[in-house]
Length: 395
Ligand SMILES: *[C@@H]1O[C@H](CO)[C@@H](O)[C@H](O)[C@H]1NC(C)=O
Ligand SMILES: *[C@@H]1O[C@H](CO)[C@@H](O)[C@H](O)[C@H]1NC(C)=O
Ligand SMILES: *[C@@H]1O[C@H](CO)[C@@H](O)[C@H](O)[C@H]1NC(C)=O
Ligand SMILES: *[C@@H]1O[C@H](CO)[C@@H](O)[C@H](O)[C@H]1NC(C)=O
Ligand SMILES: *[C@@H]1O[C@H](CO)[C@@H](O)[C@H](O)[C@H]1NC(C)=O
Image (cartoon, rainbow, N blue to C red; front, top):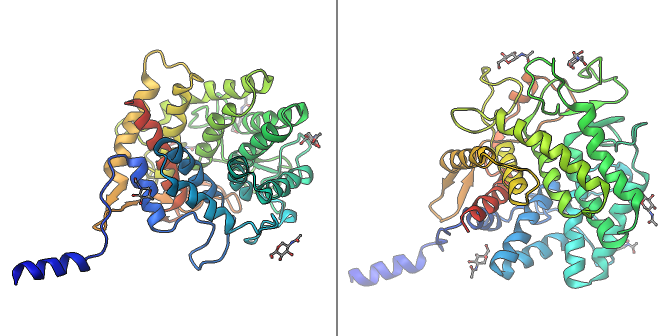
């Protein structure tokens, strides 16, 4: 009697995932179990979303590492949700909106084309590449973040646009010197227009969130038109682009060195901006310890990924081991504070701020008044990437 009751209880219990040993696998499988990043929004409508592209970047690596085809199939299904069989990109994407964000799903189009040779993925990639040909730019040549944010360069946009632009060029126009120089210049212009100078208040030598080349925005500084604060996630996006694009751009191209020089400059400054107690990074990096500021999880995960990858690939020398040590310390803080096990065997991820924009004041009070949410994919995907790098340290 007792035994049969237990058997009935067992067989009717919901499936419980065994907790994987790898945090990269655990985080990715939890996102997949929640149907995150699959080309659909929470109402089931197609959506072209950069955070899906970010997540797919991690799933690709997990597929390579584990050979588990579920990851590949998930990537393909996700893209098939936003690309029709004839290659048209839907999910509220319009070339003429001229937004850089959707282009972050483009590297997955190229990956699927490479893996399957299905023409629809090439057609979809051509549509994104076509957007760049007429995308509006500042007089210096920086892509506007969006048509509606005229003359503004945001750090975020470098991650959204340049990984796709570089991968497309590598695949289809490897000798297009204009394109390689253009990609390089996106990094350079952003750096020059936003880097904190030696006398900037609360200087870190890091990059402000963005700049307005026309100096019209309320937040634009009189000298270079930059926004007032260093926001962790914007710098996080840019730092991920700094380690992802050099793997794509040919080593023999001058731009490879230019991009790595920026990375070499910023990596130690990012290390030094971490909080000395916890190892994590503040939401508003330029206002450490100020009331309402907090340690933010997406930016922290992005820095861990970027620093570890920069050292692993030899892009940044770490003679005294201090860069890897800083990343490890932050990683351990993340696992302890922001990973929450669920009873169904999945994990939750907390403390990722939902948004940070330059569409209002761009000041401290703006950033700290934005809410965080549970399992925000921008942060969860960055944690997958950070975990992949962290777990490589011990193998
Ligand atoms: C493959 O990945 C899926 C998706 O996360 C997971 O549920 C499954 O257990 C994995 N299979 C193996 C053999 O590891
Ligand atoms: C591509 O297919 C979609 C869905 O079937 C259709 O709405 C669209 O008009 C087609 N576009 C072209 C250019 O054929
Ligand atoms: C090379 O890249 C430039 C800049 O994006 C573009 O305008 C041009 O059409 C490309 N050339 C070829 C042959 O595709
Ligand atoms: C340094 O940056 C601050 C903040 O943008 C600005 O007020 C100051 O004029 C700059 N100083 C120099 C020498 O460029
Ligand atoms: C400098 O940082 C301190 C500590 O977070 C903060 O209270 C102050 O407002 C900051 N000053 C400026 C000009 O950002």
